[in-house]
Length: 124
Image (cartoon, rainbow, N blue to C red; front, side, top):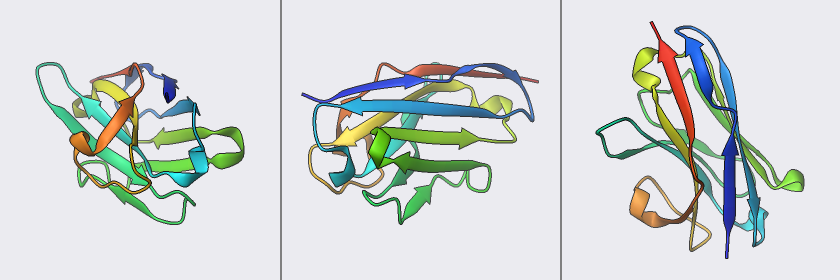
C-alpha cells in the first residue's frame, strides 16, 4: 500500500505564491515518476506536472508552464509543487499521484495512488 499526504494549500490573492508538499510512504519513492493533478469544482481531474524518478526530467501543463515548478527530494520521500504568479483559474483541489509502474505520463488513469488533496483558492 502507498500513502500520499498533501499539504500547503490555502487561500491567497492573485499573484501570490504557494508551495505544496506531498509526503509519500509505503514503497520505494525514488523508483517512480510522481505527478501533481488538480480538480476544479465541477471539472475533471487535470494533469499539472510530473517529474521522473531521478528528478532529471519535468513536464508541465501549458496552463502552468513558466509559473509552477515540480521537484522531489528522494531522501525525504517528498514531492513539491512551487506555484508562483497564481491566478484565479488555478483554484482547485491539488492531488499528488503515484503510478503502479515506475513510468507514467499525463493521464489520471495511469496513476493508481492518490493523496487526499489540498485546497488552493486564488482570489482576484
